[in-house]
Image 1 (cartoon, one colour):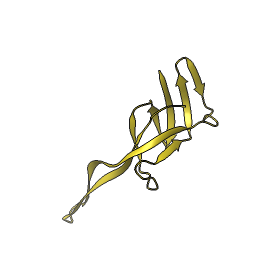
Image 2: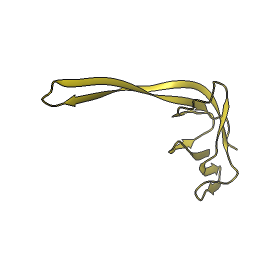
Image 3: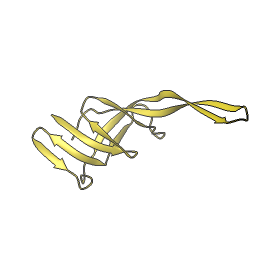
Amino acid sequence: MKYAIAQTSGKQFLIKPGEWYDVDFIGAGKLGDFISFNKILFFRNENKIQLGTPFLLNSQIPAKIIQQVKGKKITVLKTKPKKNYTRTRGHRQLYTRVQIDSLN
């Protein structure tokens, strides 16, 4: 089994080839662009294991941007007691969906 653990935007992802992942929004990227994850913490290829201290040197994982998506809506309620004051707002976080084709 081939997989890697990569870090992007302060979050760690278990990455397998042929799957897609939602990472934090990448505004500079357009649909079809390729990006690369440079902070690789761990890499496993069948029986060979590579462990970074903290990152593997000279390694990267290419990923293709396939979609810009919004997350689930959350409701934010702000209130002040005894003053009859309430405000309701909604928020949807932006994500970039990337496809991993292969691990090098």
